[in-house]
Length: 274
Image 1 (cartoon, rainbow, N blue to C red):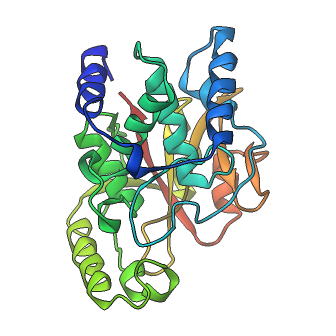
Image 2 (cartoon, rainbow, N blue to C red):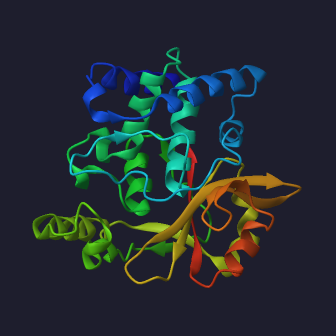
């Protein structure tokens, strides 16, 4: 993202009165201050920002709360998506001249919600296919044209068919029906993916810091995991919040082997910071 676009984004949200819509703990601001000290080392790359979170505990479901949708900031515990979102938001915050917790929150909101606007539970980008497409529209990322990338139509229906798994949807048939309508719109997206058997052959097109969205063959889901690519010695590894290891780490396996060793993985979609 160029500086003009960054200032455009920050300018929009600097006018918001967000305090009533933000949920965080004092420890989150302490971690934020520690991050600012960490960046004084001079390296302000996206992957350096991501490394700040190494060994941070993995905790799922941190965005779920009461019936009031609000921006939940949690730098203490991360899942795979909040790791990517927090990393991007901190990195973009560093590119501005407003290195404040409030600005970080504004950018995080812009990334996490459809068109950057909090308007109830359904305004959050729950499916990563839509997350990629909407953040492409917002010009935060692009979806690089990779030769031979195969068409991917998101087969999403999991949330509407498993409403009892989600606190906001459970016992709320109207909202459950509305999420089904959201899914129908996502099913119209046309993205592209690299089948997992071919990832090794496509590593030359991947760059350190690329957003790796792992597609899945689980019925009703488009993606089951995400992280950031890390190119080391000519091979691609995954820097991610691991539910298996229960922390943020760099995979011991190459991305190709990581995918091959997990039967529910079908391939990857790739996003790249502008």
